Length: 455
Image (cartoon, rainbow, N blue to C red; front, side):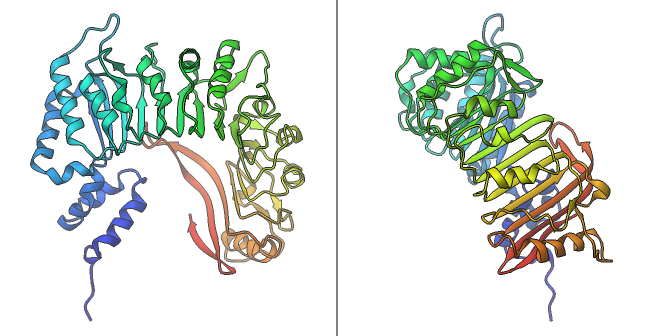
């Protein structure tokens, strides 16, 4: 009987494995070094995202272009492209090699015909580049962080655009987003706009002066990077203007660091179709008094107690509830049961949580998925179990779910319990990760829980 080695697996199986590991830092490059066979399998994944930085020089960019000239089949592998620090021009900022950079960037756009996502950071966009962006039939995500656009570009080239997501990010040095970027907020194909809170006034004034935008937008994500911020009248008014221009928005996301001062509420004739909201606890009452929300995410950077007024601020019919940063109390589950009887999905990331009794089964008959994650629980276990198993905490919790929860929660198909003891920062790319903790992740399949992941 012959024994096959791992590289002998079919290519399709390896591709599924690599897709599963794509978000694991350095996993795919490491696999590509195992042997020639795996290197060939991994190559398309290694080139999915390319970063071209002007500070690295034109030589590096043209070396990369030479590779793609010699390997035409590899051009379709590139799905995401980030251009940063190319030909920075603007007030007090002289152009650096504008002609050569323009040639290099336009070559990139012609070469990578299968782009799905494009990020422009401190890059001068020429008319030729603008035409390629607008004429792309594959491009779905476009991000300005910020970029400088030639005044000679023509907006008509975006008439056939299929861009679905637009991100407008402010700059640390105070550079502004060009009007051409705000003009893209009118694209009929656009479904999501992610905008820096400091750009709200510019976007609001621009939209107020122009004609009404498209009616297809579904998501408005207002974000803020860095420390807490205070939204004054000017920014709150601009946000109201934007929401008024997009009457069919169904999801609004606001920063968990955003504090409204002075306290204001949205007019009842604005954003009437919102069914999903994400924001800090105090903002739920300011934004959602007139909304029939079905999905609510309450998020804060410091532990907050769940109050009844957060779940009853409006005529809610909540089916999905996420609590990020909650200080879990003994009465918290009771509040959820009382005011969210139709709940189907519950996600909790708690800063603190007392140990739950094994009889504390949620009285939520429609619950399909529950995830309880906490930075600290007593002795690392979630439940106070009377007849504990000698096998350890994982079997204790699994048995408790099967014996106590399943009979009372007929719709439950997924449950996850995670307790993190300590975190470590692995750098700007990999970010924070759990270095010590417990994780039980189980899925109910045909009446039995199957262990999906455990650490």
